[in-house]
Each structure stands twice: as structure tokens, then as C-alpha cells.
Image (cartoon, rainbow, N blue to C red; front, side):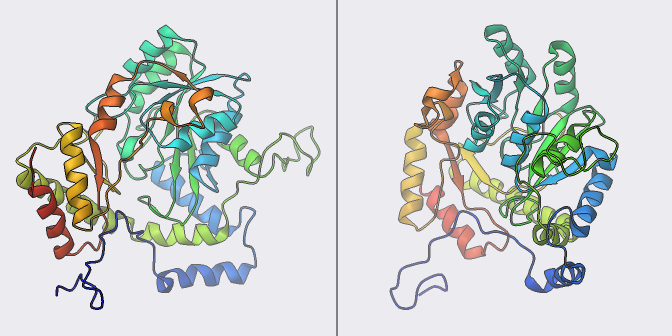
Amino acid sequence: MSMSENSVSGVRERIPLLIPDMPSPQLLMPWLERMHATKQYSNFGPLVRELEASFAHNFDCPAEQITTVSNATQGLELVLQALNLRPGAHVLIPAFTFVATATAVLRAGCIPVLADVDLDSWMITPSIARDAYSRIPIDAVLPVATFGMPHDMHAWQQFELETGLPVVIDAAASYGSQWLQEAHGTLVFSLHTTKSLPAGEGGLVVSSRPGLAARVRQLSNFGINLDSSREVPVGSLAYCGTNAKMSEYHAAIGLASLESWSENAHKRRCLQKQLRMDLDRVSGNVLSWQMQGLVGDIAAPTLLCARWPNHVAREKAEYRCNKAGIMTRRWYQPLLQNMPALVAQCKVLPTPNAYALEETILGLPFFTGMTLEQRQRILSAIGDRDF
């Protein structure tokens, strides 16, 4: 019996899709002790401010262009609110994305307009957005850095200049990959436990748009005014916000994660590169992968998602993996326009590429600490092919 088999039942343990890579309790302890010493556990405490200062340094931008939030979904919602879009504004988003992109638009009082994605990068592009803008009124664009792949911010800045439409990048999975690149723009990152910089929960807003990050920060604190120079009295409600502040606990985890980010990112890149090479070899090079854009590849990949030649091949791979005790996932499926809760609330443009991806994409296990035996089981399941 192999070490991956249960000694009682004789059934091999399933290989999980993801395993969070969080800092150990030992690494967290110095940060938690600092938090306990100050007796401040929320409300923009010293650890949150230190984390934000680290982000400002990494992004080489003024502190006022940075704010943390409780999670990226709240960050997207509050950024849209801070843009002062008209009620019922049309926000263009890709049909091929996680549901949180659409729910954030809806909760901000806007209408999601679902557009197609590029068949190689799996992302909405300025060209696709321009075509959509010629078909239907659009008030803002919310591209997604799909699976962490970075967008070309200079191209999106040019789109903003040409159309006058604000662009907000849902950069949830792309910390360390997506930068402003000396362009104007707005980015919203996730610090969820499965992302490249895990804080358990949390989000980060980076924006060169004047006053936007400060407005989001205020909205995350219920909309209360804390500026004595304003006409609204300090402590009074300036806007109708919500409670979306990052806690000191999550900031402690984020700071600990930052200390080992480069090392972990290197491990993830090496593991993904090796797995892709091995999967190409055992599959006879029939798989295709997300193509990187002009600004580089994913710096700290958190997923392994391949595209099969057709839906039949994908289903056979799923069957073999399930039989071998290997978890898989059809990422971002069904498409947003086919989600029962979203059907009546979205406007939909033609999305042939998104449907093609929906039929052929499959996520495979990917996590640091994956054993050689686990990797071999995955390769054996994919290599036992009948495409």
C-alpha cells in the first residue's frame, strides 16, 4: 500500500484542488503580540497602516493612493460607488469570470453587461470593450485579471482617454503580477487565503484617480467623516457606506505573508512550469494554456488550468481524474449569463469565445508542497488518454 493510501480502508486519499499556503502560527506570533500590546484590533490600527505603507512602497505610489478593505468583493463594490456612476449604470464585465465580479456590480446599483473574452488570454481586452461600447451604452469597464494574468495598463489608460469611461481592474488573483506600470488606473486585489498574498481575508485598492482610494476608505468605515476641514462635522455620516475595514488580525497575516512572498512566488512559478511541461509531454501536446500578454506572465500562480481540444476530451479527463481520486474543477462555469440568480439582471453581448472556453477548460490540482507521488498520479491520469 502506498503512503497516499488509507491504511484502514485501502482507498487512496483524494488529491485536493487547492491547499492554502498560510503563514505558520510561529511566524504570526510576533505580529499578534504587537497587536495585543496596542489593544487595537480594528479601525485602521497600526498593523493595517504598516501593511498599507508596505503596499505603497511596493507599488511606488503615494500612501493616499492605497487603502485596504475587508475583501476584494467589497473593494470592487465601494470603488464603483466612489466613482459616482448614475443609478442603473452599465458596467462592462467579462462573461468568463467568477461570480463576485457580477455581484459587486449589482450591489453597487449597476447593471452588468457581459462581454466576450479573447480566446488566447481568456480576458476582456480594450478592443473587445471598444466593440461593446459601439453596440450598447456603457458607463464603466471592469476587466478581470483572469487567474492572475496581468493587463496592459497603458492600453487601458488609452481606452479611458478615448472613451471617457472609467476602468477598474478586478485584479483579485494577480498580486505581484499586476502593476500600474506608470500608467493611470485602478486595481482591486484579493488577499483571500487561496490568493498569491494570503491574509485569510482582505482586499487592497490601488488607484491613481485623485481622491478615489480616500473615498473608498471612508466608505469602508460606514461613510463617517473623520476630516475636521470638511463642512460635515467629524463623526457625522458623509456618505452611506458600509463596514468593510480590514482587521488587525488579517493585517498581521498579510504582513507575515509579505515576508516570504518572493520565495513562495518562485516556488509556485517553478512548480507550474514543471507541471505544464510534464502535462504537455504525457498528453502529446494537445493541451493549450492561457497566453500571457505584453506585460509578462503570472508572477505567483495559484491555479493550474488547462484547455482540452474539445468537450469530449475534457469530460474523459475529468472521468479519469475522478476515478484516480484527483479533484478537478470547471472554473467559471456556467458562464454568468447562465447563472439562475443573474439571468434577469444582466445584459448579454455575443460571447462565442467564452462558450468555447466553458466547454474545454479544466482546473487541475496545484499547491506548494505537492508530493512527487501526487504529481505522478495526475500525470498518469492525464497520460491515459483517448483524445
